[in-house]
Length: 265
Ligand SMILES: [Cu+2]
Image 1 (cartoon, protein in one colour):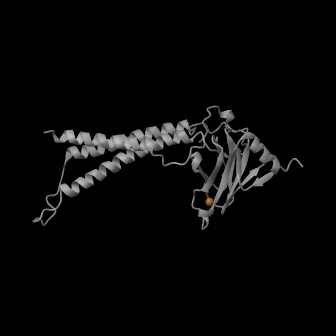
Image 2 (cartoon, protein in one colour; image 1 turned 135 degrees about the vertical axis):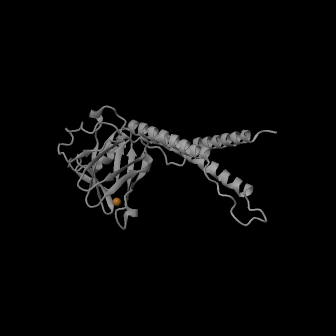
Image 3 (cartoon, protein in one colour; image 1 turned 90 degrees about the vertical axis):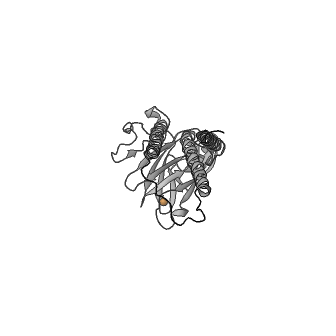
């Protein structure tokens, strides 16, 4: 006869095994279309696996308890209350503390690898008004001079639309076109309330705050059309505040740009 703890260890191992298998084989996220996406997805995968272990583990405990602690025929009350199980209290304090600490350290590492810890004050040549803030995040480049690259595009957010201004071509577009594999820098401004610029496929999201222009850099890696979604409740038609980003190869982008270019007449 095998001991109880043997079965317990076996069940825990199976739960962890199944959770890892699902975590590595089930992808819940949209396609990865920027250099940030694979980094972000690493963190998501770890969180997903931890969530699965907890969900499957707790479900098993609930199902087991339903049978094991079922009310006996002649039983009227709830039974004796459990009180002061020191061992249990230590376990359920220490294990979550370790998990939360490790996830915190790992998140910091991910944020750093996505460029979140880059120095904020290296862009004076680009932004000469002190009110302009360079958003720290979301470029992998460690070379700060390369943070701001062509094409640079101005994004205006308003209730309830995004408009994309291409200053070099002196035109405004309702769609954001960018070339693939190049760092694009967008300068975002809000005309009214707080909006947010979110491209799920790029794993980037940045608030657009009135009176505080924000620069966001990203590098698309996959040709295609992706949604731009306002991710900040900004009014009654917030749900309809969407636009598209079209990532295309260099020559397609040039073609589109030249078709719209108003400086070359
Ligand atoms: Cu909005």
